Each structure stands twice: as structure tokens, then as C-alpha cells.
Image (cartoon, rainbow, N blue to C red; front, top):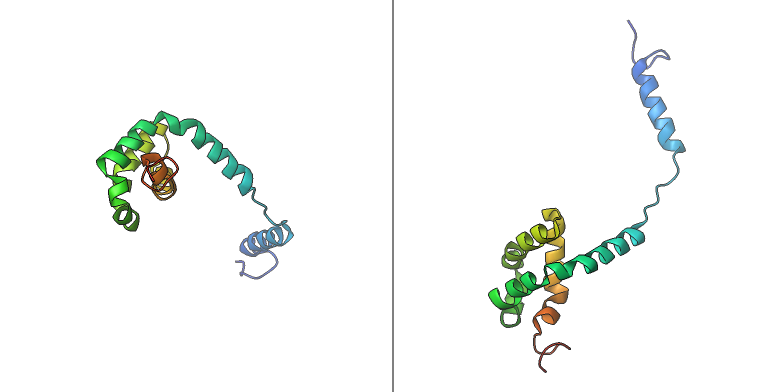
Length: 123
């Protein structure tokens, strides 16, 4: 019978090998800029294919310009309306579509809908 902690213990050998490997490992460096840039480029290339549906949903059905304040306070309604359009239209996971929906509503809704006070809307 072997006791944990002895030199011949398989458990001790396993964990000491893991600890040694972790201690010798170099820091992990992630390249977010290239990933982010690829994501933005991909979205710019593909968003036009669903832009009419997004515009109809956000601008016409939800009356974004009129209800902007309430929509931005509670994005539940806009996400419930946009996520299926985005996920299905672009063929992407729902979690990604939620992120895109939030960004579209918060940062692109006024321009897309031509709300007053934007460069594409009435002044």
C-alpha cells in the first residue's frame, strides 16, 4: 500500500508535474485587436443583408425615434424583436446576436432610423 506524499505516490507525481508545468509556462498573450478587427470587418460585410429587416423592426415596428428613451432604458423588447432577425439572417449564435442587437440599438439606432438631430435625420 502506498501513502500519499511518498515519492512513489502517483497522485503526488501527477500534481507535482502539473505544478511544475504551470510554473514554467510563459504568460499567455491574447490578440484581441486582430480578433476584434476581423469581427468588425465580418459584420460590416454581412450586416447589409439584414439591414432592411432590422430597419423595419427597429424603426417602424418599435418606433425607435419616438420611443428611444424607453427602449434604451430597457432593451428587452428591442432584443426580443431583433435577436431572431440577426441570428437567423446572419447564421450566428444567439449570444452573439444579443451583443450585436445591443450595439445596434445603442449606437446605430438613431442613424439607421434617421431620428431628428442625427446627420441622416431631420434637424
